[in-house]
Structures are given as C-alpha cells and as structure tokens.
Image 1: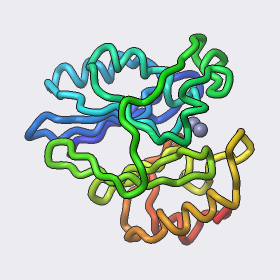
Image 2: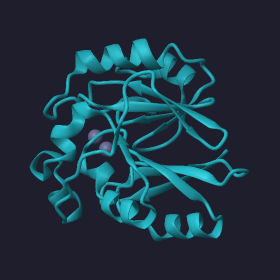
Image 3: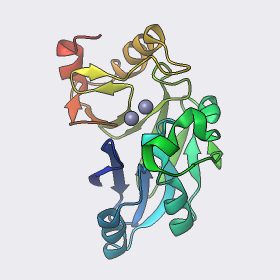
Image 4: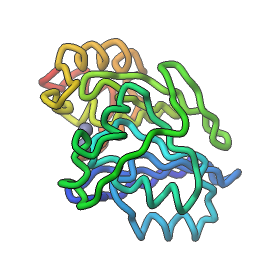
Length: 205
Ligand SMILES: [Zn+2]
Ligand SMILES: [Zn+2]
C-alpha cells in the first residue's frame, strides 16, 4: 500500500493518495485544492483513481473536487448527512476558503459498515458524526483516515452547524477506540498518531 500525504488549500488540509501498487488502483481522500505534486505523482506512477472520498463537507476538504473529478472522472464518495454542506457554498464556506464557489452532490453515498474495493485494498466506512453530521472515517488494513473527527492529541471543532461534542465523543469511543491500539490514525489536519496513543493521552476524550 502506497500512501502519500499533501498539504492543500489555505488551511493546510491533509489530502491523501492511497494506492495498491500491483493493480495501480488508487483513491484520493479530501482534495482541499488542486495539487500539482499530487497530480504528477499519480501520473508518473500510472495510478488509476477509482474514488474521490470525502471525510466530510467542509470547504477546506472539498475545494479540489471539481479539479479531480474532471481530471479522473472518478465518483465522489460521501455521506448523505453532509449534503447540506456539499451542496451549499454558504454552508461549506468554500468561497472564503478557496475563493471559488464549490457545490455538488456525491455520486456515491456510503453508510456505516459499507465496504469499497480498490485493487487489493478493502475500505471500511465508519460513520462518525460529531464534527459534522455526515463525517466518516475510512479504515484500510491498519490505517484509519479519521477526517476532522480525531487528531493527534486533539479533536475536531464541534461549534459548526450540525456539530455536537457529545456526538463526537460517542463516535470516537464507540467506533474508533474499538480498533486495535496499533492502528495508525491519519487525520484531516496535523500529524499521524495511533489509536493506542489517543486512548491514553487525548485530553478531550
Ligand atoms: Zn471540518
Ligand atoms: Zn478540516
């Protein structure tokens, strides 16, 4: 499994590329903006982008969707409970975040427990409302893409519309903290951590 991380957009969202080197199938998580180094890496490795997956609908995570959708024609994957964000530039704050109005609806909706196949990788969708109603985590092997639900030593804000600390707390405890301690957590912002570390040291949980 080949995982690459890029900072994109004005508030440095973590955009991830995750590929199966054998089949060359890959997916992108949270394209915060068009990113030339990412485009070049995909091209030079001859990766085929099968999905563009959105952990949630905030502008910092979605401003690159039009670029990547046009470039690869891959379906955009998200949870329907964030449609009020995906589909409304006033709610997703895309104009302020990236200077363009970004509004769309996902091509493919996922629910808790759904699985997607990309090459030899099985992606398990984990619905984790709290930061936003339609927030999802994506588990691939021992790697969890946690979006803005769980950060290293921190958690996502819960003061946006549809956010709830109580809900986020329950999501993390019931859906993330049941994973093995050695599971790597690759969040929507800042650095990598593990489930074990966050269970022990996260001051918010
Ligand atoms: Zn967010
Ligand atoms: Zn974010």
